[in-house]
Length: 233
Image (cartoon, rainbow, N blue to C red; front, side, top):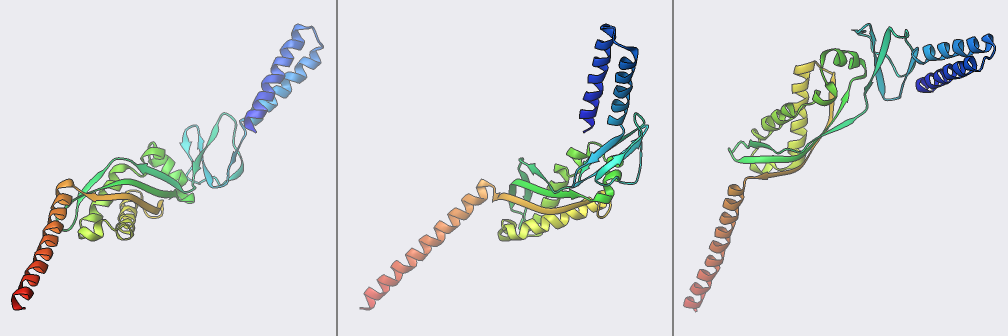
């Protein structure tokens, strides 16, 4: 709506100029310019904040600590501005591998990590004032990686690859880290998804060799028993 009013105001300015060039009545030109000024000023006099978002009001660059709620909100033209903050659930994806180790000191990596988070409605102004480039750095890869490493180190090899165990633990550790960094109930972590977790190749090769050795031992035991049975017969 702001843009529409602004464009209409510009159109009226153009109309006024055209009327002036064509020697129209001065009253017509003044009326067009007056309406143009009113509409342009009105276009800078309010902000409509959509559902699921809040606003942060600034006056000459000074941030108001009170969060502006969604809906129609007035502001002083050319003096105040209202920045919109998204308070809906948002997903942030980390494509890089995160290497860690289990409680058994086994090297393990996690890949395809997605964190679903949400900014507290009442903390929008605080985040805007205190977190630079909050849209990209609010939940950083370093914080997520630290939460994953802290989680895997308390789990054995089997549990460290079990999504139903590792994901809730990462969520808990990540929420604690963000609470320590920003304060409680500022950023809410709703879900952590890890699409892939696996060990390094040498570990997988060792497991495969161990399984082959066990299978060979079981087969040899069967053959030995068969030989014993034949000898007894």
